[in-house]
Length: 326
Image 1 (cartoon, one colour):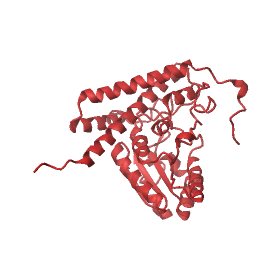
Image 2 (spheres, one colour):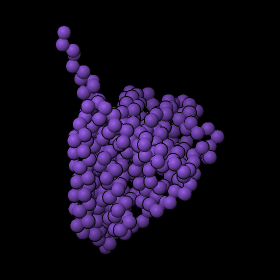
Image 3 (cartoon, helix red, strand yellow):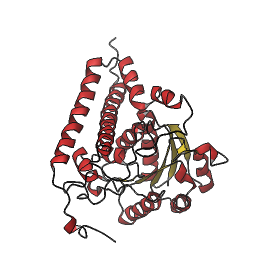
Image 4 (cartoon, one colour):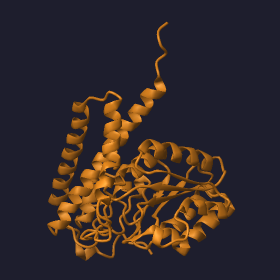
């Protein structure tokens, strides 16, 4: 008898290929931002997400286009995964008129509501109460929309995070609280700042589910977010998901990372999401030429976006009071 065709396997493979495409484009985007910052084309503070790409790719694959994402100040990856064009992101960081906020937000405060990306926030943990507001608005309007609030392990000790989780749990709001645990609260190991470093356990105090997953596996991220998103849409309330990862760069551009133990970065590079997913896809029979073509396309796309962004006119300083909300 002929074997039944495994459509679930085909779907998983297609999802993983799509996740790899997203992760490669995020990696190339962040590398290009590094290059432009080094050349002084981009001014000000820049926080890169190199090494954490699986969180953004897997999460956004599990969300609908109508859901709302509130990121940390390390948000370029979230924006690209939500579909924000790379050219618009780069133009914004370069202070160009064609930027997604017309050159006014820069790296610290850009947003793109048309893509369900409600922005980076320079106030640590401030995205969580904003996400609660979006979730409450969705409920009042009768919309099947959820809000995802992303923050780092250090932000877990901010009062706003606790207030938001308590508020969301009490009202059963459709909010997913995603902790991007890269094991460092800026320059300090998270284990040196808390009694219990299993941060997901805090969810129990608010009466909501808490889960820790491998944040370097886009498949695990996708499945976990999809499950809790479906639960939230059913009116069963929020969840806290702690996604374990490692950034492969400093906390900010120029961070010398002298606080890292010797050998830690080398080990992290062996476990980083792009390397792991490419190895898994190769083991599943995806040709090396196919993977190479995906990488080449990602590189070419970001280079083209950067060239267009650099050629765009600078934001007009005379219009600085326009397009602002208070």
